[in-house]
Image (cartoon, rainbow, N blue to C red):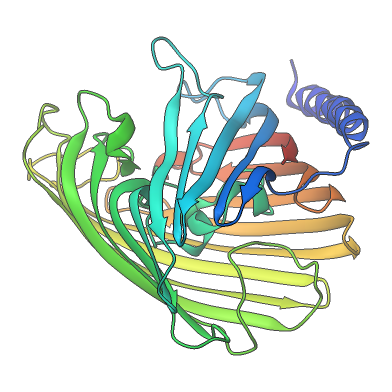
Length: 392
């Protein structure tokens, strides 16, 4: 098939997919949705049920004849995450959330969050268990409240950003107006060894080849015009901004090194990020860098050269509410570089978000153009993401 006809067919499938998912979302929008439903409450005791359903269509269309990518498309449950939260004692809360959308083989259910929390202190919450690490503004922002269907390099656990991890997590602020907020974690964290990625995973769902280790880190965020939550898009239309810095260090405890030439010895990460909201406009920007060393100091492949790499990610994502609280136009530019890349891996994202009930019920479309995928010159790839979301 000629390239021009190929692109026309690709475009027609995009439109068809958008129409089908739009109908599905409209049919589901007849019921008001809220973030969790309290099914029992008596004094300090309560039980809340909630969850998210994200139905996604994903199409990949390589621009080149690269053997690593083929033209594919699929419709699947990107996330199907119920949760239960409750309390039986004052100031103590427990929550567990599981993932059912990625069932494969014997792995029918995976743990996302599982922690208990003490809320009795005035300026700090204490969580113990599997919870999000305080690194990467985009990663901390829930998948329910992002502008793009999929994260950029800066928020991707496949490229240096820690996932949920098992340990002690502190989150707090210094004054009642929450102008300065902070987070600190000390946790057990795993890495899925792969020289083409720097893939952090939780030890709760670890595979037999995961490198195991310990990680400590923290972040501080400054909000000069009032606290700006970790969510994207501008519904309130007030002036808000934030700037944050974060860092962490991870070290292999050498309990499970089974992948010769791929086992990771240590990782240090640093982040600087910021966000702005005003009159329907929103901008989020982030830069992070990871210094990663392999145990094998001679290994050269993927992102590593002679057993080491400086993996650098940055992204700028912006949006504007064309119709307030209803229709948002979004765009992003992101880039990744590593020691063993021939060229920088660049991406351009454009998209549209249709909010039926703000983030609770929405339809998202993102078109992503990859240039020099995996740092390989002229390895280009176009992707289409269409996602329908229902949160309760």
